[in-house]
Amino acid sequence: MKRQSTKIHLLLIQLLVCLCTIFWGGQAGFAEEADIHLVSPIAAVARSVVMPGWGQFYTQGYLQGSVSIVGTGGLLFGSLLAHRSFRDIYDNEYVPAAKKKRDSSEALSYYNLANQRFKLRQFFLMAAAGVWAYSIIDSYVGANLYNAKTKANSLIDDVKQIEELGVQFGVTPTQLHIGIVKNF
Picture 1: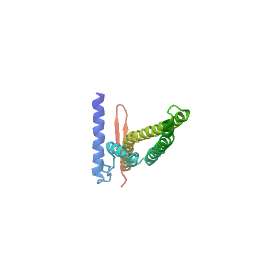
Picture 2 (picture 1 turned 120 degrees about the vertical axis):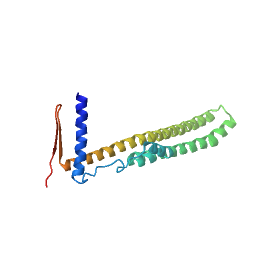
Picture 3 (picture 1 turned 120 degrees about the horizontal axis):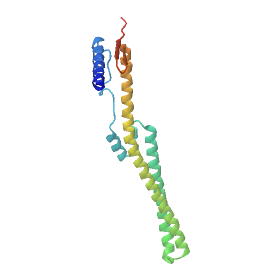
Picture 4 (picture 1 turned 90 degrees about the vertical axis):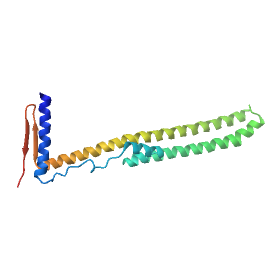
């Protein structure tokens, strides 16, 4: 019985809103789904897959997008510098020392130094991949949050327009109160 009563109350409210809109000559102008701009989470992800941060810029997350671009770029640049250092030590220091005597302390020392640069390069590459993956995930979440915020703001605007119509609602467990106040 309560469900049927609640359904009737909702139908009455919808009917009243429609009648108010007709009575006041369409002054209500409620926001339609087409009036609000929503972003596609899949498009945001696709943009972030192509370039980290692009998806965040698409969803108006400018700070996160900047962090993603700068972070990924900086880590990739660091890996390039570490790779150059690794190749320089390996080719110019270790290889000549290893040609003389492979098990010498000098050759092992250069090998360890080159290995440290190699590991540093790998760390930078993995960190860049992590920031890029974060960018992809964050663009998806950011798109959904952007859409939710946009819809909420649209709903708030609609409620303000209903309040301007002078429609008053009151609901208790047993009664539904609807009043219209209009000054002429």
